[in-house]
Length: 357
Ligand SMILES: *Cc1c(COP(=O)(O)O)cnc(C)c1O
Image 1 (tube, rainbow, N blue to C red):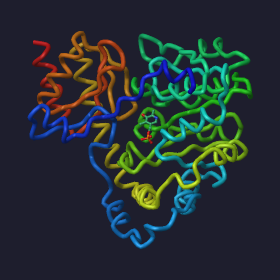
Image 2 (cartoon, rainbow, N blue to C red):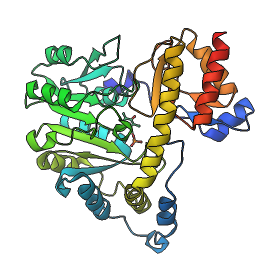
Image 3 (cartoon, rainbow, N blue to C red):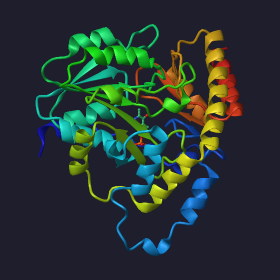
């Protein structure tokens, strides 16, 4: 077996809500630990899923996700052959490492950032170079990143807004960075939370695809589209690179129900806009509260806020016992809280306030 794997730890998935409820004797548990859409899923998705032709169950799904591909291509204004779909963005992350990394290669990631970028690189025997975010405001250290690029650097991961910090980098900043990156490095811009950005409109790096073959943009249906359970994500990249990915990808990765669900979710932009509006309201409330209480946090442009708290684990436990599950274990003394209903955000602030006194 691969030696590298022996040194790695597997991803700890979320426990099912029912199991956590039972463990803590809770009637109501609000899961704010996985950045899912707490406002649910578009009713249009339910319609699409219920109306899906069950009699096709014995047939393999459309391996090219043709209709979904057309819909995404139209929405983003990109040629269809630039898109590769995965079983969640997770599969795309895995595919990228599997396709582009060899033993001894290097990748660049921010620290902290989404842990799966590093995991898959390590499985391929690549070395992970971590570029710490700026401690004061959590911004990506572009200058430092440039100095870390070597002839072995193959992938550069930029999560924007970044998970877990929520910090957003302006598209002009990213463009200026890309300009200085050698064409031999593929820059991967993970826009899993891009819909939540309010500081810049439109907020995306998709335009860079027109000018650079070594830039790719990643998106998912798991967050604002409320489809985490269906597992649909995709990458937009140069056609030649997309072709390599298609070769490595499993032929029937996306089942038909997931495909029709994603199509329906994409079509319902009213649901997306409503989710964003409610999230932004809650985010503002939480950030103002944290600022007033002088609790260190980064300015978030995602559907979560990352905060530093002296007794973070104890606070998380207190929140859990009151029906709010938040994310611990990312960095010592830091918590990540997904923005839920405003009433729940207010209840969380009241619990933190109580804890402070
Ligand atoms: C949630 C998340 C993903 C994975 O999303 P799935 O489509 O559910 O696999 C990828 N990148 C980031 C930054 C995420 O937060």
